[in-house]
Image (cartoon, rainbow, N blue to C red):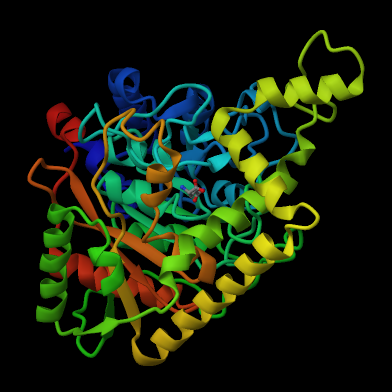
Length: 484
Ligand code: GLN
């Protein structure tokens, strides 16, 4: 039996029955990291000793609900005792004094932390190439990107270097890398998971969520991630909670295809994998219709005003004084600020800070930020109207499969376009999942996005489980295939 192919639910079952131990499971993942991490670079920090200690805890096998599950944590989450860099030189040796609430909840439920996964610096990007510590590679093709910004988490799960992982999604950073790596990624409704201890990018968008091998694993992790936290005033008690979906078909589900997202520059192989998935869902009893969202064309421009505006404010704290990097040799405080920020941030982060500062500057505030907020409301209303007609909306998760390393690195606009299908959902704050739905002719995975109304996460996961059964995707990356 290959331990690095198991789902979290299967592993829990085997541990409960005493057929495998948490120690064996953890060692299997650490061994795969020894074999593959040189190619993949999915991790920024591997907490080997701690993982083995956690796995050896009394009750690790079959004790607490998630006991013994080897987990990757995106480096955007503060972890006391494990360096947290957000993939930035600015925080290169930062040892946080506290642990993010959602990570603590997983620790309390018994997970084993394997390490901190690579990401785009401050979660800004779609390829993990913006990491200050080098890119992650895609386990399906090492010349290609894993997507981003949670590229390390997605590559770890797809490459057998974590049974599941925690990611964060601001405009698509869980769903897009999950799609490009052939795994499942769920972004909950804004407010479902505490943001306390998650290093802020755009606070009105940021949400944590699971990257897993199956929909049921995502539902399992959600049960322990969600909850109201007094330390995050935007967090709420999820009205319906989460539970493990049952195996059933899609009979009676009204599903709207967002056709506008299928046509705009979509790769033909992605389009045909998506169409095949739609047919499978229809054969499983779903009533498929066409959904029109009127203001979709404005989603990307609105996001690229609002997210940088929030980022410019959030990142003001990295000033060389309170914590993190400080440039040496400056004369006076102004020069110290300037040099610290010039040297500490990478190009994409600086670009966002400049865009955001401009959009918020006096005289331009109404024309940019104010307008973009209005567009955000219109898009929210578009979704509300569509959900009056449909239970769920679907689209491909991304317009193309994984692209080559370097292919879009010098072209920020084309990089921004890779989130065209995920960003509208983020503006509306509603839940969405990406599940694998096929492969291209070149053998690269394609993702299907299923979107639901606010706080319908439990139903979205149920629909995704039914779609997963209907589609029957059963491929794994060659990196796992070769090693077993
Ligand atoms: N790729 C998008 C961006 O660069 C989304 C990133 C994210 O969701 N963190 O902003």
